[in-house]
Image 1 (cartoon, one colour):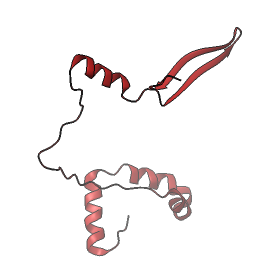
Image 2 (cartoon, rainbow, N blue to C red):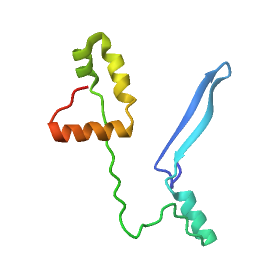
Image 3 (spheres, rainbow, N blue to C red):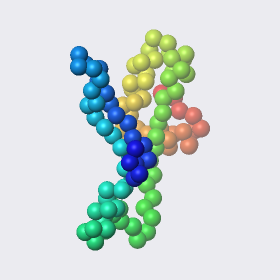
Length: 106
């Protein structure tokens, strides 16, 4: 393993000629980019700081498949598909309803 790699592995295939290495992979971290930046005197940064933090609010809906399966049995797949196809507007509407009524019915 090279001194600058934190991990290395090869992909090999057994053929009629025996085992042949078809790919070699090394986790070189940012070694290449760091050396390039040093030689070219170019700063290689892929991010830019914002003047103020940007707050992004989003709603994530997850499906608990065991509970849906137990509750809806043969209809579980259809229920899951409906939930997974909700839009962000659906999420917002349902969240508002949940906050107001403390429950929602779907």
